Structure formats: C-alpha cells, structure tokens
Length: 287
Image (cartoon, rainbow, N blue to C red; front, side, top):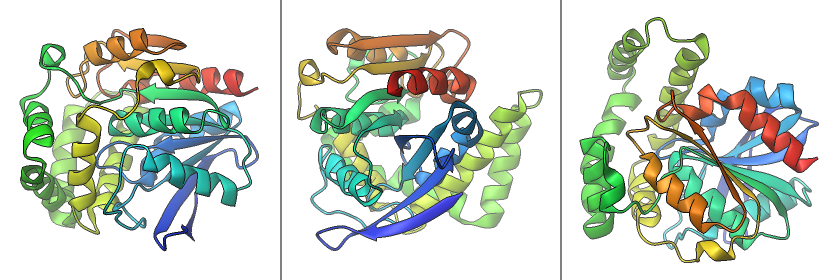
C-alpha cells in the first residue's frame, strides 16, 4: 500500500492511498461513512487481478484529509480533479461505496469529460420513507436527523468513535463481530478487519466530518439524475438493511445509462461478495 498527501489550492491537505496494480487503469474510489481511504484495501487483490490501479482518498475531515467547512456534494469533484491532475490522469473511472456512492456519482456528473464509468456499490443517499422498509433502526434515526437536526447525529457518531478508537473497546467489538462471521469466507473476515481500521482512522481526528457528510448525502442532491451522462453500474444486495435496495432501483431507473446488478444473497457487503465481477466490469468499461 502507498499513501501520500497533497495540499489543495485553498490550503487543505488531501491524503490518498493506492491499492491494486500500480501500472493499471486508474479508478478513484470513495469509501463509505465513516470510512477513510484505508477502506480501499478490501479491493487490493481483486483490483490487482483485474489490472486496476485503485486510488482511495480520505474525504474531508477523515484520516489525513483536513476538514472542509463549506463542503458540498459536488465539491468532492474538485478535490478529485486536483488529485487526478497531481497524478497526471487524463481519464479515470470512479467508484463509491455506501455513503461514498453519492460523492462518486457527483464526480461523474461534474467531471463527465474525464470520468469513463462510475460504479456505485451498496450506495446510500436521500432515501424516501417508503424505501426504508427493512432498514436498521439506527440507520433510520441517522437519516431522520441528517435531514432535520444534523448536529444531533454527533451522539451516534461519537459512540462509534469511542468504540473503535480505543484499542481495548475495538478489540472487544471486533471479537463479537468476528464470532458472528464464524464459517464465513475469509474475504468477509478480512474485510471486517479492514473496516474497523478504516473507521478508526477516519474518526481519529474527530467526528465533524462524518456528521457533516450525513447531512450532505441524505438530503436532496444538487443535480438531476437525468444530467448524469456517464455510464453507471450499480451493485446492491437484496438483503441490505443499511441501504435498502429500493433506493438503488430508483437511482437506476432515473439515470440515463445505468445497469443494476443485484445479488440476492448479499447484504451491505455486496462489494466484497461481488468484488471480482465489479473489477471485471470496470476493467472492460475502461478498456
């Protein structure tokens, strides 16, 4: 894994990590909420096998990237454009997972002349009450607060931070979750370890980036889906209780050039379950 930091025009620092094939076709991946760019490590081997260079930046306020007070959904595209310029990437693909999905789609909209294809994995967004069927109670509460009283999400995010930043608490929590994965594929257990590390890394500087991000992604987006001309592939698990599939179906129906890939056996872990397929589709679309 390689990691580096650049200073953006306004003076903010942006950190990114690289996985996969360093000489491969570039994909800029936006991890979920609250997950730093270390989360991209879950795709290291599949990306390498598919010949993809998996570039995974920290969003503002996470890990090694500075907080951005006037951050918007589309301002992430400016950060990615600066990163792509620094890396001398003329064209690239984007991918976004869970809470990172809206940012990846916004980048595809804003940088249409540079983004070849977008992948949305278990994407979240401004889900409607009717689409929340089956959603976990904690997630419902976060969505409600993000729209009406976003500062109050600080309570739940702070609780998550206490759980993962303290080594002792993290070990106890991780042990419980690993026990629930008894008999699961090794890839699922490895992904859980990476997620814990990436969430701890994201929240180590504080919680305001995550609280801000929930408010940005759960409210109506500042662009119509009909204006996204970039081809979009969506992967979603039928059993997803974090981001129910009804929202992904609406997205796919509203985008001009979208393909929805449904995994009936997957939940919010569809990215790990279908990692090989995701990489193959991206590699073919970039070629």
